[in-house]
Image (cartoon, rainbow, N blue to C red; front, side):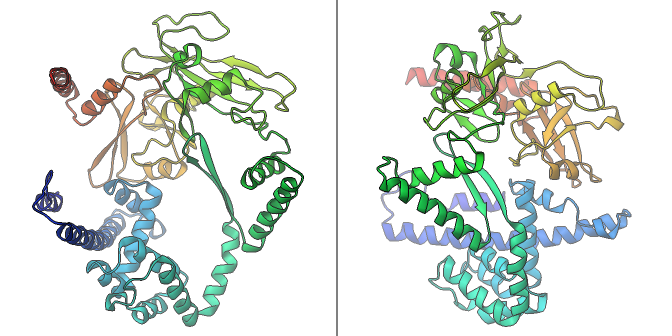
Length: 495
């Protein structure tokens, strides 16, 4: 915090016409050098913390094979990163501090940034500690070896040096890489997504060539679609076996009933993807046999978040004037058969948007409660982790008299659920307008996680929720936050 304050104190504030362009660029460069130096300092502190934690775990009787468990997760929370990235950052720190002193020196002096230091560590990962140190000395980034070099030049130099040192290990690494082939999905803007496949080069080139030939053939026959569109459509068709594409899946869509029935512009949320536009969500529900983009049939399981409207097809109004509905679409997605749609309502508390549901006395979360936790939490509830939900966890463990309820339940990814069970880690629910939990690490640091606001939650309420979460004494804090918000609104009106 002191470093941040000192950096902030040295920056220009507001408009500073007395500074010319050269001075501004010089300060930008100086700040970049400081960022690199701070990254090097973080690496040294991470290694020291790892050693300290291992020593404490050994003293506590932890088996040697488990020493270091949870260290990466603690570093991730401190750096506001996901646990998976925390492990990578710890690995980077260990390599720099213990095996690559020249690269670390270059990082400390601003000759390399953290990303390019990561590239050097990654390209030498297959080498022994001695060979990696030799490559580090050969390249000597602190001697200006990479002045003016871009990422590709750094990667090429590191690969060549690694191969000269240990060609067998580099070759074995290339062979092992084929076992890491996989397909991943991540969101893209405008209700699109990136479907990425990591493949051996021969297979990847063959797939691309096949799609290219198919697209060129159709273009030659007069198809008006672009080459890229034809390749994308062919990929979907050949993978799913359907001309339109999608079959045999469920898509859970969270939206307010105002968006569904009244043409409201409040966006919806697609679990595993993120925010989607209201018009796109309505098209998915009102035209279930046709994809909104016109590419074919689809099938979905949607959960509209409601606020005082009827659930479609039931004519039943919720008792408290708020509700949430699930739309299930089942059946043939070939486009020539209608699909059946069901709405399943969940309930939201007025104003706060907190979801409510039935509790259970069962040891395991029943299917309905699991669906509820998925709709409420969206992704893993560990702070800064946005991995998909894989486990439904008791925040207070069952063996500590934790109940199988919505308040004591949380969706977690597999890695975070295992980390939570390590000695020194604990979680507990916390009062708040929306579902909130505290995660406490072995060092005593506590981090907060609040369920994302469902569609329809007022923006003003979301801002108030965050003010409440920042204080353990939440009622006085909420009162103070409300006073500040009202004063801010009056000032805006007066302006």
